[in-house]
Image (cartoon, rainbow, N blue to C red; front, side, top):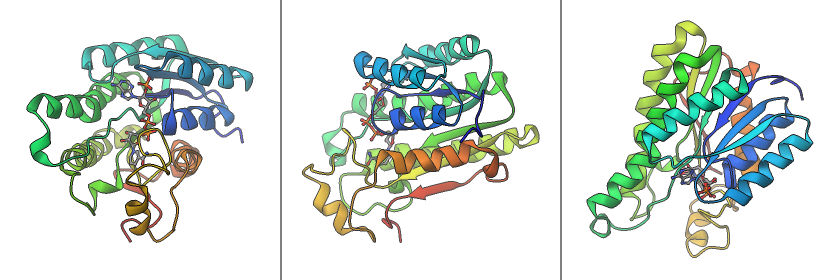
Length: 246
Ligand code: NDP
């Protein structure tokens, strides 16, 4: 359980859902964690407390992932406070469900700013600070591989762009032993996509397994990618979607 002992981690959007579960799972394996949040300071503080109770260091930084300058500055500050950077989990993301005609171009800019531009900025700030053998892990979506219902155009577009970003980073950083991968969840029970929400039944009908996934199941996949056993795994997608794309 100590395979990440002393590793220095930044998790964007670590206050709730998959990001919170990931921050805690990495700390359980010995990592020190800086997490960012946007609108949930109390939830972020609870995650910090939980990590500190494990005997690890944790910080919460208020950073809007749509503000690329703030994101880059935040990653730099986090690396300074942690004393380095080994793992970046680009988790912060927003959903965008509806027909293409429902979204204004301002809406499109906002979704791309959080789901892509902020990820690019975080990686750009992380790369020069990251130790050799580091890990870049980006939260995509199974919708990047297969869109099974209408109303997903903007979201799927934003998440599929992560694949190109991640593969490019894998090529750029392989000589330093740094890996870059996308984790692609299917329906996971969170505030973004509650298992008792109005779209839940339709999503379950499309799965091989007949239930939503849990945040800890996704955190386990991220923890694997962050660990020493995944050192040869780069430039690819780890899809954890209950068989959505089967
Ligand atoms: P939640 O909505 O439950 O949590 C989102 C997290 O991201 C929160 O910690 C939130 O912080 C943070 N966040 C959102 N917007 C911003 C922002 N502008 N700046 C900083 N932080 C922000 O989402 P999930 O846990 O469900 O999703 C996590 C990731 O997984 C996302 O990238 C999502 O697209 C992806 N995903 C989720 C799926 C699902 O079914 N749940 C399926 C496929 C992919 P705060 O509360 O402080 O605002």
